[in-house]
Amino acid sequence: MQAADKHFAGSIPEIYDTLMVPLIFEPYARDLAARVVRFAPRSVLEIATGTGAVTSALASQLPAQCTITASDLNQPMLDRAAAKPALQGRVTFQQADALALPFEDGKFDIVACQFGAMFFPDRIKGYREARRVLKPGGHFVFNVWDEIGTNDFANIVHQSLATLFPNDPSAFMARTPHGYYDLEKIRGELRAAGFTDVSIETIDHVSKAASPKVAAVAYCQGTPMRNEIEARGSLEAATEAATELLSQRFGSGAIEGRIRAHVVTASA
Image 1 (tube, rainbow, N blue to C red):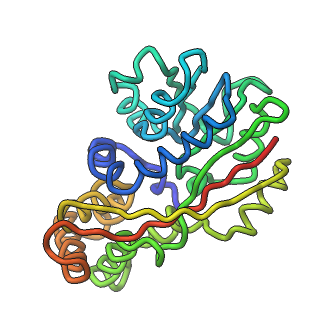
Image 2 (cartoon, rainbow, N blue to C red):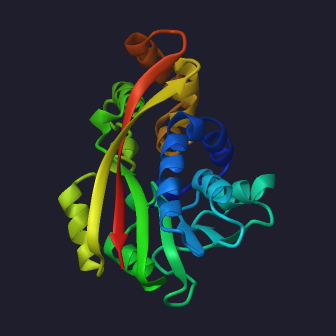
């Protein structure tokens, strides 16, 4: 992973929240929140909160007496989440590095993380931190994307950029969001961090976009891939190239594509 892979700033948070969240994140946010609710926690820490997709689902499903703390490395993303009226007064927001959490040992019943582990520079260290802040018998619940070939829109956009920049293609999508899918590696790193009873379930959903352009804008302009595109050439040209290839594959109207992720539950 490169340093720019973690850079969610500028207009990225807004586009991410308005386009990427409904495109691919919402169904998995509801799923993750439902898994957390089954444990009936009194305190939940969310790491890699982003713009609050899981936070919103947790706030709507958990009873008021359960405290929710939402953290993220990127303050602009956290600001976007904190501005949501439904979360104000319900959730405590705190900027935090997942590899050095500013919370005491044994504070939370659950640690939840939606599509954030792929961005950890040192996953075992991040997992150790999650375990440290969990109460004995607590649970770490998180999800990661499967490899890029099983996620249609991401794969097509990735291919379009390889064609547009043949001498220096953007590798962000395959390298980071879709680069951590080896289930045995995930289990091994969790066990190395001290977790037991690791279970993993693979979940398929359908991603829907009103048009190929909507999906292209979401991926090219609403993720850190934008940083790689702008370092190589025109953001508009890249968006148009992605739109064209998505249109060729899925049609010019409303489009649908498969998405696949792995959902992990580990016991402290």
